[in-house]
Image (cartoon, rainbow, N blue to C red; front, side, top):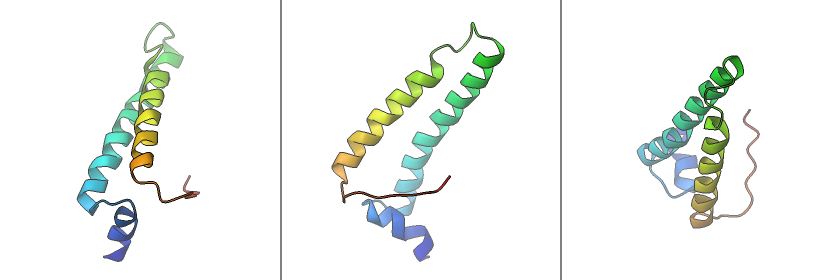
Length: 78
């Protein structure tokens, strides 16, 4: 059970809250990635989808990090 609660607890969330937040970041990024693939094939489509999504998600991440700042954290998950 600790595997599912340790990290969410470290950022002040329950497992389900963390799941919701992670998905609220992940799904738009997946959509942006698909938009980038479409744009590569058809350059006249989705010309701003990736960059707009990344900028919006970055702003959300920085705002959230400020509320839950516990110092530098490094995660090498690739």
